Amino acid sequence: MKRFYRKVGVIPAAADNGAGWQVVLDGREVRTQAGNPQVIPALPLAEALAAEWWDQGEDIDPRAFPLRDMVDHAIDIVRAVSEQSVATVLSFAETDTLIYRADPEDALFAEQRRVWEPLVTALEKREGVAMPRVSGIVHRALAPATKAHLQKRLSEQDEFTLTGLHNLASLAASLTVALAVAEGEVPAEAAWQAAELESDWQAGLWGRDPEAEARDASRRAGFLQAARFLRLLRS
Image 1 (cartoon, one colour):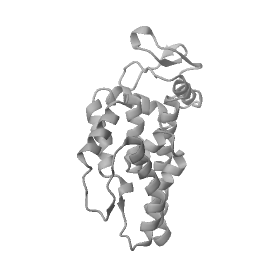
Image 2 (cartoon, rainbow, N blue to C red):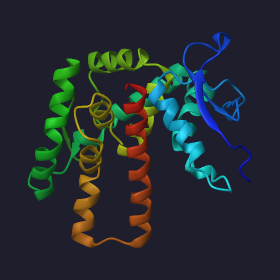
Image 3 (cartoon, one colour):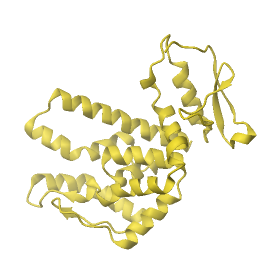
Image 4 (spheres, rainbow, N blue to C red):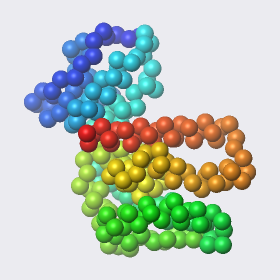
């Protein structure tokens, strides 16, 4: 698609669209991909969306709108199915990578404990919950009280925060990692490295292939964008 606008701006949302900010192209308000008013709750996030439009060349690259895509998903999808979205994000606690570890006699176990245990312990302290630790792949359910608390915690989040958390948790396969980033306890890059610890360990043993490297780079970029999304949302 050819670029069809000259000017990009950010204005306060119209009163009937709710509180927030809207991006405008040549004075026209941008709408979501489903046609809903694209009202953004935080000015820094709205300005970042405007920058995505400014940075387009003569031809618009639809892949160059990661923040817009997350905003639209929050408005068009998550808002309509918030309970389902909470359940989806919660599932990444029930299968959290950071609680499933190698056998204690394996060298990987010590590295997992060194990197992962501080993150899990911080979650437990912050949330007042107890997470299991499992050696092997046999599933162990969360304690009912832990699951109930985390479900309530997620239910209290707005659709934009849930969207960011879902992206982080799905890419890291860990709600522990997602919440650590959202709370600002761990820099996004360090959190990503923690989530990829086992994959990197195996690659160190057996080597890497170009296709896997490309997939990992794409996943890392998505994770860092989701972290940026939440940071801008809370600025």
